[in-house]
Image (cartoon, rainbow, N blue to C red; front, side, top):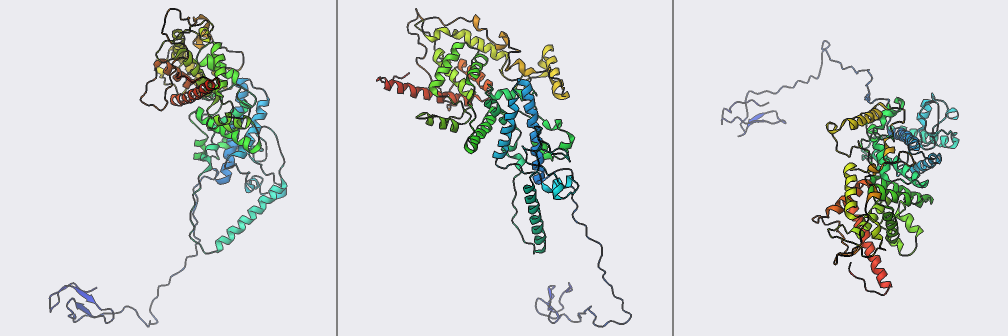
Length: 574
């Protein structure tokens, strides 16, 4: 490096070296005298000169040691194991539902067939059990002596030397499939060896989304299959029945991983455990979307038609459980539902294919849950009879149907009493949706809560604590009392006939339609209470229910104008 001293000629301290000549000059070009550049490279070495020799290490380089747990499965092997755990959950749910609702043995057969179809219709079907994995379990035996596993839904192997169906059946391996799997493995190994010899190239990395978090692989799909199975054998159920059974822990669903055997859970990754351990029951709208999609795929791919809803008993539950009314409301709702052409199938495409004429257009965008459609129709009937807009109405003739219905004040009082006694008609009293503090419970309710916790946490094998039967049962046992229903209809007086009040509106006169998109509008408190109670019974939001009511009201108005034109009369504004 050039010395940091002053030039004797100009006094500059800035020096530079000419590498070609080796001279040091200042910035003005004056050459620095008495400076010598020496080279440290020797050309000739004497006989006594020592040299440092570099030895090459003979130790083998250690590869990247994986710190992953060898017990955890990954890739296709993990997906296959995940669906096995999901299938175990489904089997327990079928057994629990048969015991809980006293269903026939054909229900299990129906569930098994629908489950196999469901696995074949999801966007990313589960893979067959890996070939090399089965060879490993069988001690590396040859192909001819290996017993490979089958597909999920047909065979589910949970033991090293057994291949047992999840419903108890057994099947033999397909030799042709084994040969194809072996050939595929040989081709893949050859490709791997050839890729190692080639020059490494920069490849674009593709991140594949994990199939475990797919919407159609989650545990709530097992509940949608149960829904279709109940519709197939004509069981009059609604979505809230399954949700209540889940929250009551009568059907295994919540935090199900802790109930699986250690031989299954030790192979699950943290992400798979989270997916298999839902902390909340699915919503009614989510269950309807999954069930409706499944029914549509069954019809479009295999021509399988899921029967319509068993409307009669479900409508009676709407009348009694939701609105605490009389059989006349059942009859009027049924007649109005026929006029509105309510959806009774799970998907509108099935309904459209079975209908002819103008009804096809009605079903194109009418894919609401059937129980919601029945509830909204009952609300329209109540609005036609009582108004529920702040104006008093009375019939003028004794022959009118409104005369057989209860008085409006007593009817609303009974509904409010039932609403205050049981805010959620179908829900379990200790549901996560009900805000409740243990400090506010009385001694009797606290004892019931402790019994419920013992059943859920201790996992008793006895079936003595069937709390759901106190709220809904498909048998004649455990009927609700009149107080539990919130209404004793034989004590309510009927609507009086208007004889001395001129100017009073009649039922159906001056009907008010509320716009569901008007966020600044206010609904009459009586109607708001009915909507809130109906929305909780059906498991949907109040805004969604108001939108369906408005849609059906507009449909009813169009029908009314059509009837007036057909009769040769001008339609009147109602």
